[in-house]
Image (cartoon, rainbow, N blue to C red; front, top):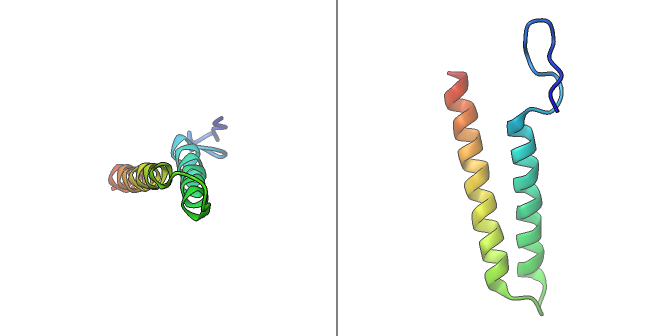
Length: 67
């Protein structure tokens, strides 16, 4: 959901913010799976690797787009 000001800048939730929030949720799910003794550790490693890849690429795209 984007609310634009008169200059065209985004005020509320940009796409990169939503992507980063989703990546944080995936990271927490992976961390919870790794800490749970009865859960399969492969699931935790999967969620952690996906979330870290999303966070790194999102920051890279935002940084590259701003320069």
